[in-house]
Length: 105
Image 1 (tube, rainbow, N blue to C red):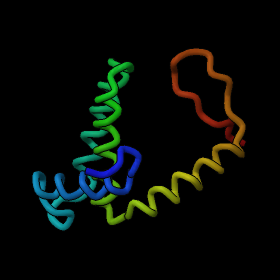
Image 2: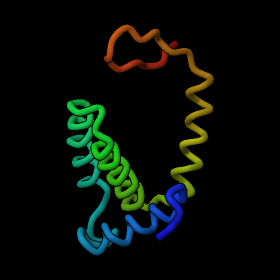
Image 3: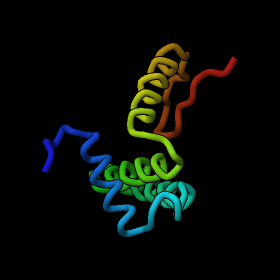
């Protein structure tokens, strides 16, 4: 078992399990996991203190990313890139638990 902080090892282990259970990436694409992710996000909203709901979302995000032909390295690089984009944006002030989006010019 890998160190708990080794996200790449988790990516690899989850990929092996998912392909064994749900079919290879060549057989099953990203749409099914994305549809399942939408359902899990609703469940996380209903139970925001339930860690396993977030874990389900992570599993499905990784699964859909990989099944779309993208790599762990691409996902991580994209996440860092998007963080910089978001930091440069102006954001509306949150007033409730509703979604907060950036200010569009």
